[in-house]
Image (cartoon, rainbow, N blue to C red; front, side, top):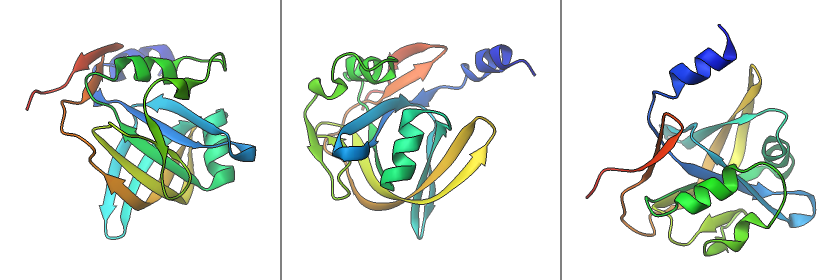
Length: 160
């Protein structure tokens, strides 16, 4: 299966948009936009994110042992795009109202939801790593339609 073709096929699966945050060496905040996030179990409370193994985010999550997942609302497209852009130009955290969760990871004050996790396990999966997080804290700061990603385009999620 050619990766470009598989990417086009998988783009037909609509998913929510999250920003995964963690800390780099020295305590600097780091984050990236992701769409591969899911609840795994309620007892114990586990979630998973899939991160490119050679990415700064994956290395930072492994080193720090913590991460948060911020579920973006329909009005967070600018944040989703900012954290999806490659490179280390301007500080990504300059947009949005960010605070610090119990683990030290950044959480978006007006996210639809967020979970704060410690790394429970990391499993290699091809060119990605499946990171299991034990949820230490969680919140639903505001009710809002989610930001959806489908066929390489952002959409406003279902209205409430």
